[in-house]
Image (tube, rainbow, N blue to C red):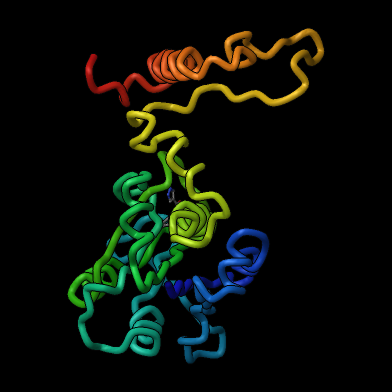
Length: 234
Ligand SMILES: COc1cccc(COC(=O)c2cn[nH]c2)c1
């Protein structure tokens, strides 16, 4: 899987060389390239933004640098197997299903916008050539798409076969189908008693049936309390 990042702060992505994703890079499972969008500017001030047509506060990212970056990185031939991801507050919610689907992609280009956003014709042009995903990390505004792109990258790449040490831990996580799409139950480890708090008896019983039942009940109760929207049968 090749991942490209178009951004005015490419150093944001140096962190991807660390730990888990670093290993995936070292053993060639993922190939990461961060690019400074200003590479594709030609004026003395390397300008990437301009005032919004129609007025309003703030600045908008000019289309030219993005178009020239696409030309260099992707060429002009349409290819639906290339996924262009634009993290934006106005995107559709990024969820585990999106991470799962994108984990099968051969190529993902993250376009990290700043200011008030990117000239919409960049999205229109990209949509004619590649598979475009305008995705939101959550209902809040960041200064730029870089942090969201990092979070999405981690959610996606950890699902790629060979990246995680023990893939079975994937199936027991929150939002995974194996949990019936519920939130994960509380977890414990040694010591059995810690600062006056004990591990629930059932987990020390060795009775796997009781433990599984307790965990299912905990997941449903936690989901009912924190995320009733995830409960389908109520
Ligand atoms: C592309 O246009 C813009 C405009 C403004 C900010 C950003 C950065 O993304 C976010 O703020 C975000 C992503 N998910 N939730 C919030 C992108």
